[in-house]
Length: 181
Image 1 (spheres, one colour):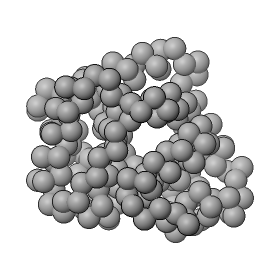
Image 2 (spheres, rainbow, N blue to C red; image 1 turned 120 degrees about the horizontal axis):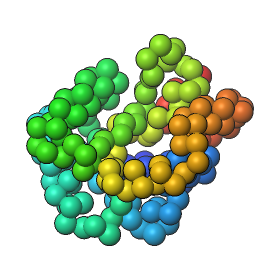
Image 3 (cartoon, one colour; image 1 turned 135 degrees about the vertical axis):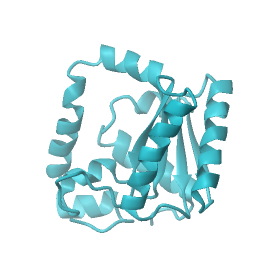
């Protein structure tokens, strides 16, 4: 049975999907060293989500031992298009508040859908998670990792190939909380 607790569900997704399938070759080390924070936000209003983001950026700045935070949105932005629009707003907000180049926000959503793909295309599963997430990354750490990783540009293509190798049963086992292709 998949965990119903949002924090546990996201931790399980990290273990089984992100690390288990090696979708992010950089995730294992910080996860195993407890340098990944999973912060649940139950707010619905975008202004409150933005305040939670601001607080989390301050928290990360004050805690350099943490590598990253996943903000789990349990009550808001369930519609992917609304979520995607909010991400564009966040990018502008980061720039306006002088966080650009310091932090970036990566996106994961239960209904993630890349442009020019059908909703049930398996490649969308590379960015699907149990809840809408705002994944805060430290830019300097990311740049350092990418500089040392051979063929970093190939990571998304490798992930798509890896997911296409899975059977429907395997996909259902890894993503029981979302509609299947």
